[in-house]
Length: 89
Image (cartoon, rainbow, N blue to C red; front, side, top):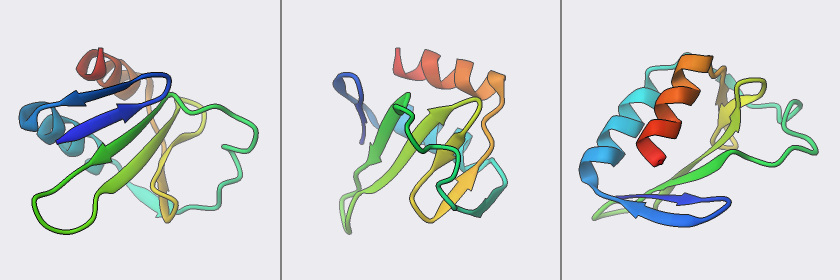
């Protein structure tokens, strides 16, 4: 399951979660330094829940700052923001 938090909280089914995780995992990552996100409000906070183990979360900051999970971060091109908006809409 995948949830969205900010500005509202919604739950999405396994098919949306799979498409979101495939989209997010396809990006090249680097060690997160948190420099860009300072003072910015996130576009969305994704929480992936699994049958076993803890949930995994990803914060989507937008095209300028990309996305991160507190440990890794990635750039976020306009096309991916459009896809995320469509999937979460």
